[in-house]
Every structure is written in structure tokens, then in C-alpha cells.
Image (cartoon, rainbow, N blue to C red):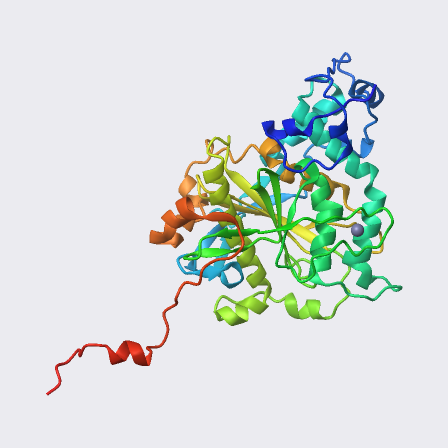
Length: 445
Ligand SMILES: [Zn+2]
């Protein structure tokens, strides 16, 4: 008997976009009963009880001692050089960060499975067949399961658009817009709640995905993705995953197709310019220099993460925790950057590869599951339990100090889903008019 799912129950809210097949049927039952099988998890039994056959690849890491142990997070602190008090677009945002280390010079880390323990537990419960699944959990599982069943197709599309230039056959380099659309259509958007998303409508080409495969049913949604306030950090997010009524849930920042999200080169290097980029960015660079370097993209992603988190905090004051993710993604890898605006804690994962190393065409299974959990963070993320942290001050990001008297704007006046921002006049060299109407500092004789 097929189980019909009502996606409007996801996260207990109604969904704006429901473009898949599950909505067609009636919601037969509030819950799908999964009974304990004497402690023995049996996938076939799970499949029978779910009413559909689960792709076993979703359980790949369930029995690991430390699931997803490659996905470690460091804790970031903002240095004194930070322009959070100025009227800056995200592309002009600048901040220096350092990773928090202890007195023995060891980085303090958080494991993915600590932060997303509910997601890890859900997969384990499903495999072990140990409890009833809530309807919103089933909806989320169905999204992951669908992705694995369509994985070959998405791999073909992503390989062509993101890695076409690595292949001997195709040397065509795709534009940033093509990258953003392909990532939304064939990866992030297929793993997000309700499979819905909005791409920044200011992209150069508002069209369909260019993978050209018959399986591609691309119909990208473009919209206003501006967030923040013109008097402080503000600007546009490349892709927003909104669950309902246009309220943003998760952001993704797509880095220029030739940039990376970290210094580590995890996949095969194809471009000599990698070597130039691999150098660490010195702290003394001017803003213009920094923009061309990797740290420009990093500053931008951090600013977007922080602003986005303040918005979520204000929109959803009843969240169980306020650790909000931003997916910082390039054609090869991604980092998860998260900010908790209540506790003022900023964390960033190591770079995680999208694909298995070239020439494999396969996506990394761990990365797929991690992205799925991050996009469903409202269900799966438990936040950072700071009870056991002796001095929370030592792991806080200092953003509240960096924002100074502008903090109130971040907390209370940040906008979302805006089309544009008014220009804020900037201090500049004195004009004829200004000095023409001036008064004398020293009286004229
Ligand atoms: Zn496509």
C-alpha cells in the first residue's frame, strides 16, 4: 500500500511550493506505524512498513562509531578589523577571523553528529525500525530517498555543468549563473524541505538549467533575495530555501565557479591559477585587494551568515535553538557556516567535497546526507550545548562588540526578501557646496 505524505505538515507549517507527486494523494494516516522487531533492524521490514522501498544508501553511515566524522566544525572569532558598523553590501563586507584554540594550541572542535544528532538518530531509528515516525520525519526521509533514487541523473547534470571543464571531451566553462541554477536544480533544491527554493533574480540569465538532459525538468524560481539593512551589512543571497509564505529558512552562497571555499584542494586541480590562489591572504591588504582574494568570498559568506541568522532569530522567536546555517558552496566543495545570534557563536566546517575525487563521476554520499540534514536544520539541528563550556566568553565571536551601536539595526531592522536597498550617503572629501556654506574655525582678521 503506498503511503501518501502531506508535505504541508513539514515543520508543522504549510508549504508555499509543492511540486511533487506526494500531494496528489490523501493523507491516509497521521503516522506510519513502525513496530519494534525484537531489536533487529531489517531494511526489508522497514520498507514494508513504510509502504515504499527505501534506498539503502541513506543508511551508509548509520553504524559508524562517529558518523560523518569528516565534517568537523571550528569556532570562529572576529578580529578587530571588521566593517560591520558601516553601510556595506556583502561584496564589500570585510572581517578577519581566527579559529579558537586552547592553551595548548589545539583547535576547539564540534562534530557534525553532535550538532545534528537528531538527524543521525532519525536514520538510525528508521534502519533499526524502533519507533513510529512522525509525518514530518517521513516527508524529510522521502526527500532524501528520492534524491538517491534519482542520483545518477543529478550526477550526470552536475558533472556536465560543474565539472564539464575537467573532462577531456568538453572544455566549455559554464557561467556562474549556470552553476547556481544547476546547484539549485540538481543538488540543494532537491534536498530542501518541499524541494522549494528561490534564486536571486539579479542573475545574468534567468532561464532553465543548461544541462540539456531529458531528465531535467528544470523550472527555476527567481525572486528577491535581498537581506539586511542599508546602514550596515546588506545585500543579496544567491539561493534561498524558503519553507512557506516566503520566510527564508536556509541560505546558500555560491562562490565564483573558479574559486574554492577553502585553501585545501580536495579534488583534482585543473587550473594553474589554483597556485596563485592557494596563498594565504595577509591581514594587511586593502579592501580592494581583499576582494580579489579568497578571503573576500569568505568575508562575504560570514557577513551573509550573520545577517541571515539575525533575521531567522526575529522571524522565529520560538525556535529551540538559534544556530542557523549558510551553505558556502563552489563547483567542487562546500562549507557549512553557522551563527547563533543569541549566544553569539560562529562556527565553520572544513571544506566538504561535492564529488568523489576526479575522474569518478559520483557524488559523495556523506555530503548528500549532510546537505539534506543542514537544509532540514529546523528538524535536525540541536544547537550548541554550552552547559559544559566553562567560559562561554572564550568561544563567542565578538560580533556584538564589532557591531557596536549598530547592533540594534541587525537585531531589529534587518529586512528580508527585498528587491533593492536605498543608497546611504558616504563620507567623502569635502565638496564645494559643503565648504562654501561653512563657518570659520579661526575668525578672519
Ligand atoms: Zn538540469
